[in-house]
Length: 396
Image 1 (tube, rainbow, N blue to C red):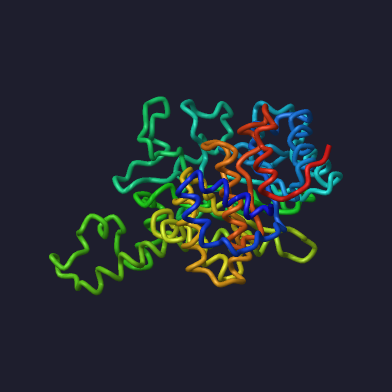
Image 2 (cartoon, one colour; image 1 turned 30 degrees about the horizontal axis):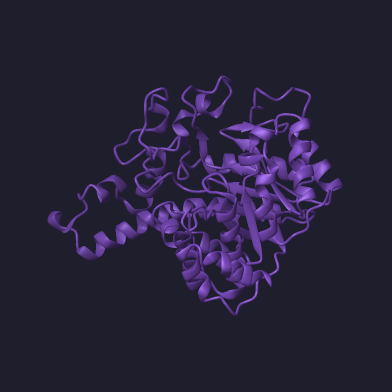
């Protein structure tokens, strides 16, 4: 009995999975060229923790690890720009150690770095040099003008609120972030930069005063007046002009994020570097563009990124498949080859995650990334169905 037949037999037990796999009954599973594993920063504090994660990645056949070395504004490496995480010993450099070990094991090591998100704990950073304390004017603001730096972290927030963000449109933020990435690119023998939170927090954000001033200088229109209905035919503006301002304001925010991606891409591809640029992105191309101003399909089409990893973390396989089909409907074949499908392990059982890996392979994707090592690192047997679905060897 071949693997596809076994998948179909199991799928019969689950009507939703059977419905989706029926159309692929004569298809073949694609071979995976790219097998990635996300390793969260809580596993980067010391040598023992890094050893456990990377040895597991090697034994399980992963060829790329995304190791989180910039999280919530702290560095998990030696930096002249970003303060080091307080739980890391002064003399220890987690990134340098991970790169050395990863290369010895034949694994590509990509520096996973949070971009615009700055902080999310209920208490402020303890280090007074943290950007949260030193550059409050750089933080994002919502449609009502409330800046993230004004939020009382100890108080309950809305379920949608992710944390304190830097403003992508503030004229000093992108240059600062580029300097952070450039420092790592020029100081470490990494194989890749992996961007995360390379987007807005949501569509109601983007109203940092300095960022709005840039837009107003171009169009002579305050963005808040657009969304508050002041720029309206009721007050003498043509409908055509009103519509054009909505489009311009959305594009302005998308372009701010794309500008940073483009500049990082140019940095990693300077002569002498052999580094890939990737990004963890929202899985639905349409929502990514219009809600989070993350135009990742354009990054792929314009060739300003080497590959993207849609975080297709849906628990229901119908929702997972919907995102896959939207990608296939909106991207050309050569663009789809730049897509590595992200599958979650924290919100579903191992067999459900494995089924989604197989569905991605049946759809022809040649790359899968697993989020994350940390979710079940204390019970490694849990991952066995996932390893089977990835189709790679497991070594003793």
